[in-house]
Image (cartoon, rainbow over all chains, first blue to last red; front, side, top):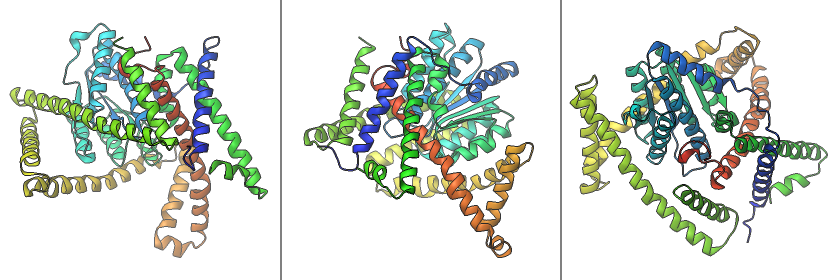
Length: 257
Length: 207
């Protein structure tokens, strides 16, 4: 039996998965064009800068675990961590990754280790690269600030889910003269990142990072499918707005089912 | 097989969780509760792994007499003390509560207070009208600050009407746009992982 009030959610979830699968299928014949995302392009530049300066690159996959509704952002952040690790492995640049939640730690460690393995630099991987801090918000924040200050990093990448510590991180990066790249789906923290960081990945830009970086056909196809789902959502919103203006509540009633 | 097994497991477990969210079946609800208990057990293992990493990193720092070795020693002592107090004396014991009430809570409050200074410093850099977008940000930011301050409303009684419109129409439209696209993105990321299309968390790439 379907739970009342969740029918529309189920229908839209199925539509989104359907458009995603359609996008993946279509990508096999024609690769979709994904617009340039400045924040992701800047990662290569930031790692290059750190390499030239002989300093470390710092990144963190946010303050969230993989068992909540923000898991998608954490997985997307881990994709970016993997990409950065490949670059630091390639250029022999020091990498520091701070992890907040215990269940993200093994994934982050595996991601970084694999990146060094793929680049043929397994011996360069150091256990000190991926550091568990604390799932306590301010203990994690204090640890991150300490690492940025002590290591005098040249590039900081804050991606994933963040809370009020976001502005502290961005300012800490600025204080040590580092390039700051941030990305989050949290609408409360986006203004802080946008104000204080050099580049910001806004909402879905973070979630498409994996596809954008890997250039993988299936993942790029899913981004195309994602856009189709957005178009459908936009159509429903537009129709709902017009009908509501005409005092017809059909769409509102359907969505509340 | 080493790669397929976790993907199949994740797919089945994920499907059960999704079904439990949308459907009211007693059998699925019971399995979901059981699975959520497993999550706690698996999380406990990952906590042990993470704690070992923390202990190794800081022990190495102390033995190498690196800068901040004293802080590392302090961290290890408090970590062991909190664990011992929690395990042997219980979470209601004065020793365990002391760590939270006398160390963590005040430190967290102090840290939270720091955010105010950081916001001011970030705003100072952001509120410089070096292009049209920054100028728009500066103007709306100043208007909102004036409207929110009691004296602002006394001087410009019409200001709250404008700023309320900015917040409830322009700002809300932007926020909802980001939220809707993020939600769709989250569904796609989750579906990709559960269907095994995205395997990056198990290593790099799909193959």
